[in-house]
Length: 130
Image (cartoon, rainbow, N blue to C red):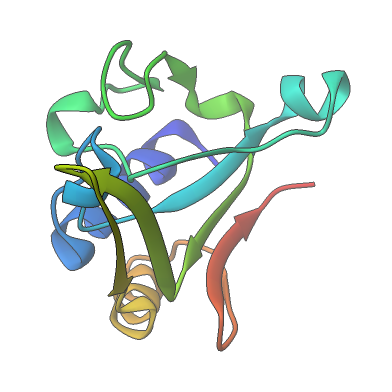
């Protein structure tokens, strides 16, 4: 995918799924992603909300936002948006668990309208470049 396509993907995701937050239980969106360089190192994935509009640049995700560090679009290898995500946390000494549903059908429809190649199953929407 080209940089412009990744940026458009993130813009559409924000419009459909809502604002992300760096505090998990306050976020309206969630995803997992890895990069080509991470695949070469340890095949690990990160998880966080999808980046917000003010974190998107022409060629990368900015430093210090919901993803915590900069990520060049050209290094993104796999991104997964689950239909449902859960967050567990302790608030005022009490255990809490929230579950949120993400409208991956609408996200898929909008991405298709804009020619963004992706795959959707019952569980996830994904962009996989490897």
